[in-house]
Image (cartoon, rainbow, N blue to C red; front, side, top):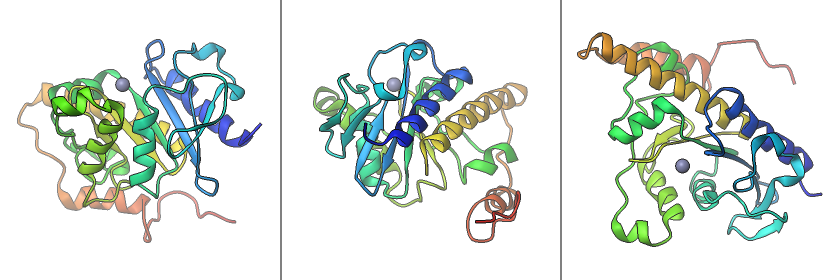
Amino acid sequence: MLLKTLREEVLDANLELVRRGLVLYTFGNASGIDRSQGLVAIKPSGVPYEELKPEHMVITDLAGKIVEGNLRPSSDLPTHLELYRCFPSIGGVAHTHSEFATAWAQAEKPIPCFGTTHADSFHGPIPVTARLTTSEIEGDYELETGAAICRVFLEQDPLAIPAVLVAGHAPFCWGTTAAEAAHHAVILEYVARMATHTLSIDAESRPLARELHDKHFLRKHGRNAYYGQVKTQ
Ligand SMILES: [Zn+2]
């Protein structure tokens, strides 16, 4: 069996989305990529989570050709592949219809950064894609969804804001691994819920000051990060 460890990581990322209450029925999917081989492992389409095993993960190449697996891959595979092609730094993708993040996607409103919980993981508001055109919807819809996401990040680092709201649909998140992508999906839902509460308390709430936003993001990420324990190799 190809990519045993990656299959296990991808299965665990999918199960994490369920454990954290982000997935209803089979509405969600996570994948991971082995960059050295150019192969992606993704959840199969429509299989109940309680029955999923590592061998059920479908292995494809970056063009979507199935390399190993008897089941059909998640129907969102072309979106995941487009993200892997346009964001070379990412190693995992997670998609859910989690309640609060999806509500913001449906409202087509970026999620402002109201506090340090948001700033710790996302270096800016969570952006929203443009609506797809009729021809994009009627054409290669899942691929066009990925392309719409890529256009949002033409001039910003996707790992600085590892999430997006697809207009009228739901969030997609990513990270350097499938586990990190799932983690970002969980944090995004928490941040979306708190932003909703913040605005319900005071509709005039102001975003966090830029310097505090930068402080929180940059102490955890990048060259000068100092949060947590020193990593020993
Ligand atoms: Zn979806």
